Image (cartoon, rainbow, N blue to C red):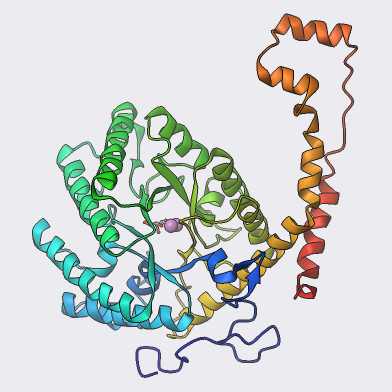
Length: 446
Ligand code: XLS
Ligand code: NI
Ligand code: NI
């Protein structure tokens, strides 16, 4: 293939666990059935244009190291936008995954006015439609970049200046419509700078009202234009701001309930954001599912020694098996999927490093899926959980939850009924063994 990745086959093949070719999948087989559903449809994998095609490999101490000609300072912005799209669609097609995701500013440059910026995005969206038709690739979600431009330094919806709110609202309107036009399955809002740097200059109450108003406007417009995808908030506790309002799933859920937005929004969970919030990724997935707000996932990982969003490609089957267990047990994704919101390391400057990163991440997810499916099928964890809570299904438990007993009546039940609770083992180590045994045995299931 003579495009931007000349050494890569037009489609990354499946080679199996013993494959010697590095550019081949060991586990990911799109058509393989797992609990009756194709692996591709379970995982719904997406490539993100932001980190993978729009980031030059720079960090705070150094400039870009990656070979991304369209990011050159002297490139004509619109020509560069089209070159970037060509390379991105070539990449995603060769990877053989069904979806991609992007921010408005990832694909189209900002113009000299709002109208010009909008025209740039419209032109690029037309080109994207052509690429999507040609390749069959679909849009998992679109989002607006409300954090890079200096106008958003103090936030977008939560900015002290109403003009910034208005500008951001107009920008989201355009990007929501663009996502709709491209048949996006979801629309994501990550509150990049919706938070504060210092409480000394921040009016928390006002900012919360502003944010809620912004989100109602977006939900209203979604219905107005007939966009059927889900609206998803992406929790993150900090970075770039010191404190972000969408701290984690539980915080987002409380906010939505408080502002009458429940039902309008779900969450897009990112593994590294969960760990930054002091949670495991497993926790965030389980909380979102239990609250009924689970939407989609930004797949990546942090570094146990670093306290920031290192956005590395995921490579731990052990960790992802637990998250996937929750997802498979809950019936799987509806509109969501696994988006690789992950960055190469700065020294990974070969063009093919982008392939190695994604292939490894995809195989890790595929293997975690097999483990999760196996755990669900075996049912040991569920059986233990059901037994552990069985007391709540009838008798005393049902009476307590049903609300028919007052505190004095409960006291009478304890005294007269001779209630004398005896502690029971939580069996944690045994259950941990159950998980590990499934991980070790997964190759035998074929
Ligand atoms: C940054 C976020 C970002 C969102 C989309 O930390 O993960 O990539 O997913 O704006
Ligand atoms: Ni993300
Ligand atoms: Ni992130």
